[in-house]
Structure formats: C-alpha cells, structure tokens
Length: 75
Image (cartoon, rainbow, N blue to C red):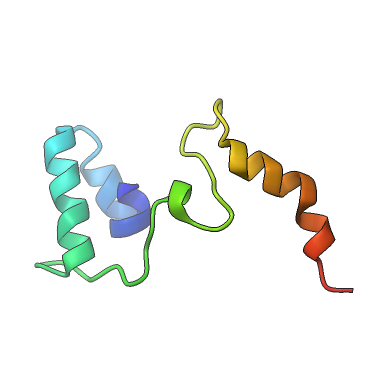
C-alpha cells in the first residue's frame, strides 16, 4: 500500500520502519500533509474489480469477476 500511495522510492526507503510509521506516511499522503496528495486512491480490496495484496490468497469477488469479465468486453 505504501508504494501505491507514496511511490516506490518512499516505500523502499521506509521498508524497515515500523508499521505505525508506514501507516502515518500513508495517512499523510491521503490527506496531503507534507507529501503529495494521493487523489482518488482506494485499497485494492475496495476497488472495482477487487484484488488482493497477498499473491497466495484471493478475493472471492475478484475470482468471480475474472470468471465473467469477458461477458462485459466491448464487441
């Protein structure tokens, strides 16, 4: 999430920081306090179509979307 909101460089620079610090950076990016504001960002599990952050796990709605997504493709 940190890389999505603050960018890869910020995420790499703060990889060894505590989760509390990383959450604060995310909050700062979402509010625009001292960092570039991340407009319109939502977590993957709240986006359409849903996705998971853990590659070994899946989100049931995302799997269902994958099964029917071709039905919504433009002809």
